[in-house]
Image 1 (cartoon, rainbow, N blue to C red):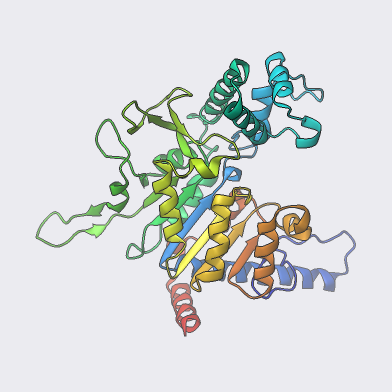
Image 2: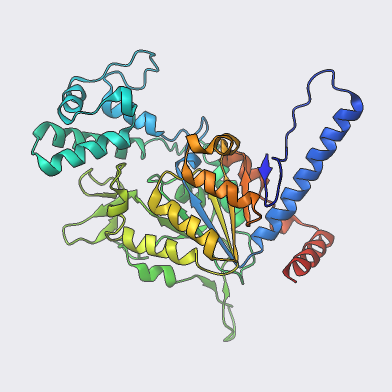
Length: 407
């Protein structure tokens, strides 16, 4: 389903037709779905033609039975329980975790099995009291998180990152005269980098091209062009190049003793340059290199003629959600597309869920350029139209429509 500006109801893309439905009614339902698909396709085509296309990808892009990335509950399971990964209904909290939970006063029944809340409580506790047990628990938890976000990618599984490959392939086929695709992600894992490598795409990630690869924001200003073999003509931008900004760090970033950030295959939990799950993510975002990456994020949201695609992100991080809300209200040239498999549920009872969902849904109903698509990451990747597969007649129709819409 999807919901656009001024819509009264969600529009079904895959309608449910109960058995025994009258043939005329069935035909009307199927015709409405076909019209909705065509509307969404044309909308996405026009969106990808905007000068700037920006993506914010959250943990939802790495979850699911195919990609197999760890969920927040999985991280709790392996950090806290003595029988992790067993799928047992009765979970046994480890002795070490039991001791720490009792010491810091964390009440599971009230605050649920939330690894972010637990680590936040541990960090706050250490601000006022020294505790070897709590310190050890935090260190071991960071080790688990680093391992779980690193080990799930299977080099031999050709289908594991199929959605990522399709997503990047189709978005990277934009016109070379437009700005490069900018992909911001809160994920630590290497799903997008690995998928880009398998797809033959070039990733500009803010690190040098020399060894050791060190972080320097100047590299975001560089680009790759194809120079002609003869003559002195200026080169043309190379296809398939995009920028990636890992807002919370990466499993292959290591902070050295001189405070330089380098790419390293397996950093230790202490040296890994990550913003681990905790309520203090907002404060940690103002330490390099995260400060530079967040600054880039703020900057692109103010650019005119920008399409922002938010996928797999639950709007639970205030330091990333607030700028989006501000941009929708203040940037008249921003188009926001939110993709979430639970979008209909999150907007049905917004007061019980999240204030951002309530506000953004309200803005969409008021006619702001906010679109919500009820789909998972893999389904959305397939929805993205392949720009170079259009026939000449389709391209002409698209260009005429874009020209008409711009007037």
